[in-house]
Length: 443
Image 1 (cartoon, helix red, strand yellow):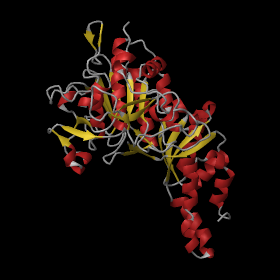
Image 2 (tube, one colour; image 1 turned 45 degrees about the vertical axis):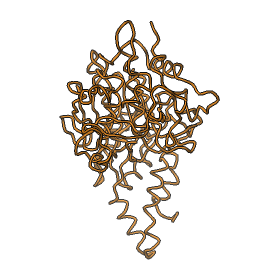
Image 3 (cartoon, one colour; image 1 turned 120 degrees about the vertical axis):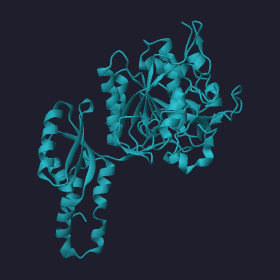
Image 4 (cartoon, helix red, strand yellow; image 1 turned 90 degrees about the vertical axis):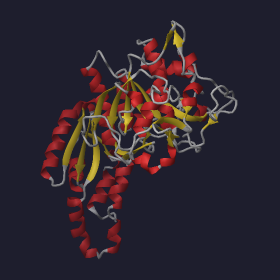
């Protein structure tokens, strides 16, 4: 096998190819085991010209423009190649490329830092909100509701549910490019309600922590709940650009109940998913991400939740008892740390088991599990996906109370205000169980 030109390229430039892409390129040669040797050269030539690979190309920061120009020239030379999106903030572009064009890029383009496989990313309230101590938070004789803040739900979209009426102020669709809010999967709608449902269809019963917060729906996952690294990066970058274009009504919080299995790059800051969420964090947007549902084993924190900057949320099982925490514990499925890089994660826990929130009628999940419907307008789901927007809703209350809080200050207050279990592993429980009352001090 090592005699093939592409295999030699993979070996010579392995430091510039992420593991997933290296594996995919090598696996292309598996069928060659069953073909006569005299046909190998012909088959390889055809394979290198015909096979299409979806990739993210990252350049050295100082050579971003030159790198993009060089990639554009190479893609034009090869059939089946297409350049898609540019991410100047993290010096990347996305493209479809054939193996022969990748070979040319690696051998001639000195500006390339790393080439990543554009891998798949998956989508990972009643008692829950009360358990988080976020149902009635009063400060300065005013009930905090998230009014004046905006939460971006980066997910499968948002169905215009009655409980969100008039508050889906923006919608961006990177899957089907539609302009009006919709959700053909149901996951994003549930998450939107977890954060900001006002319970108008349930007489106040199924309410999120921030019932007056505005929402931006950012659809990056398809009907089946799947997306790619590229669509996620587009969604986060859209939020950053949105704030530059709308400085008087910015997105304050991003809630991301999605992720992909973590892969070691030697340094977490080399992970492109981590890079884009940290860029949002540095721009002033508080980013809340799901830890993942791969527990109870250690080192199961998903990307981008392994970022040391963003707020990574694990799931708690509150046993549907709002007024006592004696029987509460981490959900068995909640992913555990440490991360692949040795960092303590998750940062905090929030309720994530049997959460009742908004239903998106006739969506994929709604039709798949009809038994999960509750009172016609609602739906029951479990996961760190549900815990994450609950934290985003609490952050909305914090921002309403004190708009000047920085992202780092918000994270620190959430953690120091959490209810702590004594002698519990931080890589299972994080800082503890979210408590909105203590995370928002009287000022």
